[in-house]
Image (cartoon, rainbow, N blue to C red; front, top):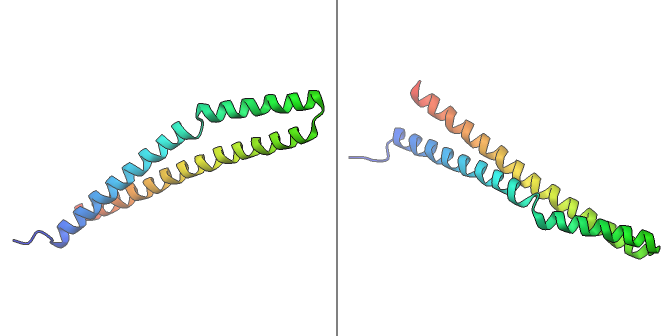
Length: 108
């Protein structure tokens, strides 16, 4: 009895694509929810804003410049983490659509 027939192989590929697509979407959602807007990043952004205000009040130009650089780095970190999360979700939907197309072709 042969277990690796063409039909069984297509079913295995479809199930694998569906599983990886679901895991990719889940990982993207978890990344967006937990990492992109974490409390540590919010605290760091708030402290940097206070540092800039203090630098403005005491007229310390170097402090303002460094705090501004830090704030830009935090914003870039948030954007890149969100971008990775959205990319994972997009890849997951492509994998799910591919699995659905193969399943539809098998049924038809």
